[in-house]
Image (cartoon, rainbow, N blue to C red; front, side, top):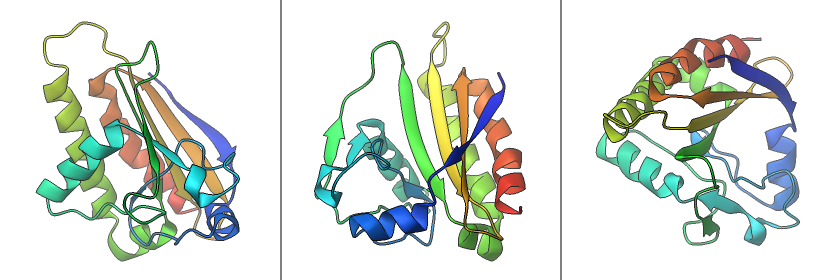
Length: 162
């Protein structure tokens, strides 16, 4: 399945507008980051809890845009088996581009195990990537089965290095 690229609001600007801390590592991006009127309205998917545990067990940092407990957790969207959105600041790529590969490999392995033996699971992984030169952001979205998630790594690095 192809990875779709689209423009996304500059995350630094939007985080400042909402009064959020700007993450320095890979972070869970709230679903309504662009639409929320305040930090207290931000919502994350239930899968974010699983991602947090997965990264924590692997001793990998996974940040938030808000203090723990300050957001609303939402359930699954009808028709999708698993969905999550992450943010990758350019500073991660400058410090350790291997962190991107490790994060995507971790998610991919988890999803392969989770959906082992299931036919046609629907997975949607979106990653908002901050570009190196302008601070502009692009959203990369993969939707398909677990085997295609690993293709995100190269695209994330390509966008981050623009």
